[in-house]
Image (cartoon, rainbow, N blue to C red; front, side):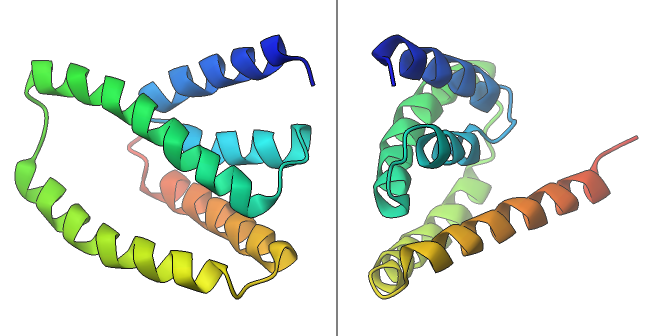
Amino acid sequence: MPVWLSAAAALVISALSGMGVGGGGLFVIYLALATDTPQLAAQGMNLLFFLFSAGSALLVHLQKRKILWWAVGVMVAAAIPGALLGTFLASYVSQSLLRKIFGAMLVTGGILALQNREA
């Protein structure tokens, strides 16, 4: 896979992520399917990718004062133990099952997003 193609994919996925499309899931799919990256490695790279894309989006939201700090606190309080538990469990789950769980999560999230969208 040429480096320029991966850079182009990262640019497009970052733009989609900035628009709220959910670029993290797209990046894992790209890594797993287009580059044959193992699922756990793809998820790890996705975390780094998310830090940078979310960091740039955070600057824009800080400037526009669109952050609900109480919601940030609730999410951080739930995310830290969830991430630790997920990391622990991922080491005991096969790559195949992990991909299926990830796919099911994406499909479920998509269905919920479609059901809750405003007309």
